[in-house]
Image (tube, rainbow, N blue to C red; front, side):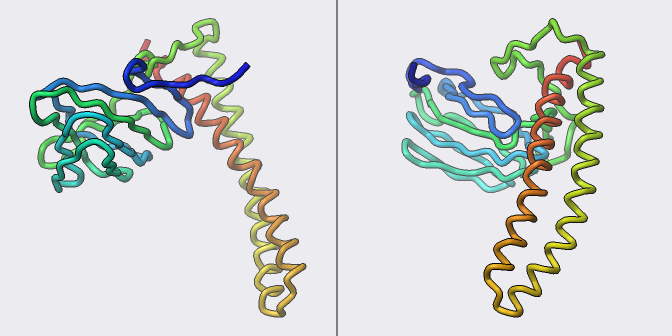
Length: 210
């Protein structure tokens, strides 16, 4: 059956949108620029494929061309401007991708209100057959599950963490390995629950103003 293959010359859109990562190809025309903004949680990676651009990240400016990449870390204000008379095409990814995805910034870095963009802004079609009430119920359930798992995980980390320290101090590699495995087995469901909470939240947040 195969898997999707994307081409930056034709697929100018978001190609993967999940709570863990949003990735897309983006084309900008000569002179075009993006508003200064930041992401509360997400690191954003930019890889230039065609054209030249000027990036400003956290007050510093660099010019990039094809094959070059830069990173705007979470909460760092950044913007981009196309240079020259040729269009620019880039690949970008934001991870994690959690609503509100953008925080607009003033030129002096002052934070404006969060931007809760509609799902369509990310080429996502919301499932309108699921009501907001149902999404709220799922959100609450996911939060409660995360609370339970986090409490269990914290107890395991405390107990096994002490065993890990003792095993390493005594040079008992087998015991240290077993303690680490138990810590991971308690931690893994927490990450899964966080992912579920984020997934429901990303479905609910854009609907809240509709």
